[in-house]
Length: 214
Figure 1 (cartoon, one colour):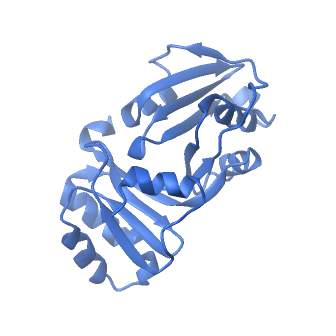
Figure 2 (spheres, rainbow, N blue to C red):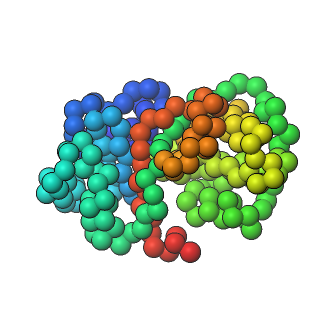
């Protein structure tokens, strides 16, 4: 059975789990991150809980089997079982690395007080931060060791394409695939990532320990 990093690595290269309506359960890559990945007609649950509990709970749901892992009742059962919390179901996208240097003028900074930086350091390791004219770009190791991007653009400089430029710069800085988790309702952010060449590949519900709620 493939590990979570191996599954993510394959997806980044365009090779997905079989669209067979099944659910694969794999161990967590780290104590911090558990959750659910839903691809086309196949889900991956990464948890250190008993796989039999996962499959039994899914079978007990009176819903479309293809949607069971993202059903609110399963997610609530997951939280109750693990004592973890979750915020939202995100669209999961990935962008291949790009050659060249960012067109933006970026300055790498240490800013632990910025809300976006604080949030990223709760959820990611080896976080690096760059500033650019009223915005920040964050890269760090998240789920399964993948490289994840987050950006924050100040209100006064929005609607100028800066978000697209930032997430494009992330692909140039990375040297490897870059992953993004975007709230499904954040249409503006989704458009920016798609315009920068990121491909939606599935959805994700991430479960973190209660201590990460602060």
